[in-house]
Image (cartoon, rainbow, N blue to C red; front, side, top):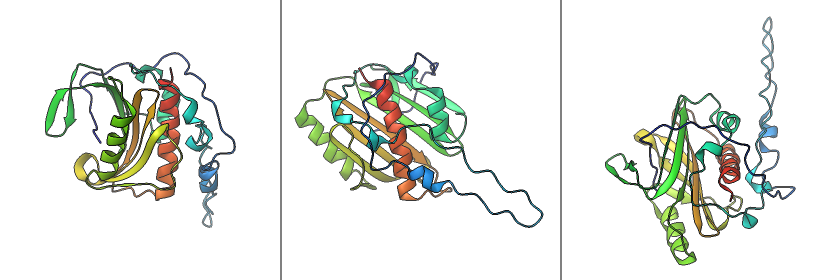
Length: 228
C-alpha cells in the first residue's frame, strides 16, 4: 500500500465538489453522534462544551457502486472544511503530486509517480488520497486488493462499508515513524483505482470503530472530489 509524500505544494481550494448519490440509512450513520457526551463538571468548574457534530457523510450512506472516478488531479476539489474536520485541526502541512513527477514512494525510495495524490497533516494525524493514473482492469484490481490485505502489519476490516467494486478496508500498524495506525480504503471505480487513508499517531490511541468511521467519512469526501 504505497503512501506517497509530496514534492510540490499546491493550493487546496476550488469549486464545490460533485454531489454523490446517498444510501440511507448507512451502517455507520450516527456513530460520531454517539461519541458526543457532555463532560460532568467538577465542583467550582464550568462544564466543558460538547464537540460540534460532524458535517461529513458516513461512507456507509454513499452508494459507491454507482460512482465513476476520473484518473486525474482532484486534490484542489477537496473541501478545506472537510480536511479540517478529518484532521481535527487546521492543516500545518498540505502537499500534492501529479503523474510523472518524482515523489517519495517510501521513506527509502524516491521515483516517478504514476498517480495523482495529496497529503494533509496536523497534530499527529495525516490524511492521504491518491488515484492511479493508468487504467486498472478488474484482474489487476484483484491483485491490488490482495496486496493491500497482505502488506506487512496490515489486516482487512471485515465490517467496513463498501468502497467501489473489489474494494477493501485495511488497518495497518506503522505509518510515518513506525508508531502510528493507518486506516485505509482502496477500491475500483470504473477503471480508476482510488485509495484514501487516515493515519493517527500511536501516542493518541483511537478506538477501532471511531478510526473506521473517521476514515470512512474522509474517504466519502475524497470520493466526492474525485467523482467524474
